Image (cartoon, rainbow, N blue to C red; front, side):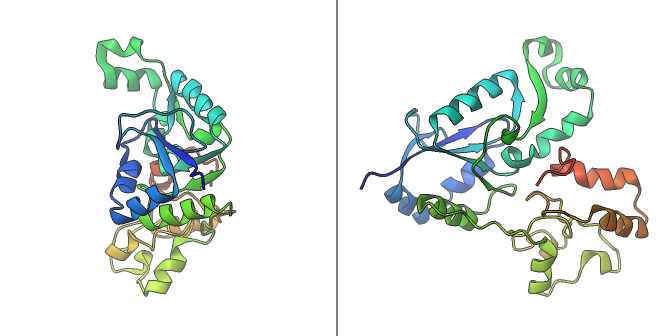
Amino acid sequence: MKKPKVGFFEFTCCEGCQLTVLSLGDKLLDLFESVDIVNFREASSYKGQDYEIAFIEGSISTSKDIERVKEIRARAKICVALGACAHLGGVNAIRNFQRQSDVRWRTYGDKAWLFDSILAQPIDAVIKVDHVIPECPIDKKEFLRVTASILLGKKPFIPDYPVCVECKMKGNVCLFHKPNPIACMGPLTRAGCGAACPSVGNACEGCRGLIPDPNLSAWEEVLKEYGLSIEDILKFYHMYNGLMGVRR
């Protein structure tokens, strides 16, 4: 049977999601038996252009990015946003809340005028995205599960309940209820990470995006109850979800 051809592509990002794929070990070899990877810069210098499935990492942050991602979409039958930057705009979107001329100057110095940087945005702001693998970086098991579903022609399962559910299932003490309370985006954030950050005492910062119809006002009331200002609240939003209005 003819194997589907797959390409991996990157825009503005650390490429950590692609490195996660490469770290799959024997499972990656199993994947190679099911697909023909024709474009994956982290793994090979070969650049085939006849892919059917495109995994795209990174946010769109230049005019040239817009042109390139549209070309990828035109070639691919299925496009998958790989990780928080492609899904939400990610940490790159933090700069959207600053004067862009200042951002360019701090980054490129007196060569800033050479770069056509624009406001960072997720790939679905430019092209149609068929599936999303969220998180920063992606989870290995979820990548394999979602990819298997796509290859079988099924809709991948991505949880639509909050991280708090996974915290409860693990028996974690809520970070808000600890002697020194820690503000956490778990009540708003899409589960699927196994409550990775709260389980080791760190706040969830929302890297998997928000659940459908999150109760933002109730969460903000909780934060205010613990003495956090609007500025403190916005810091949580802006880490991964600064473009949300409410992005999922």
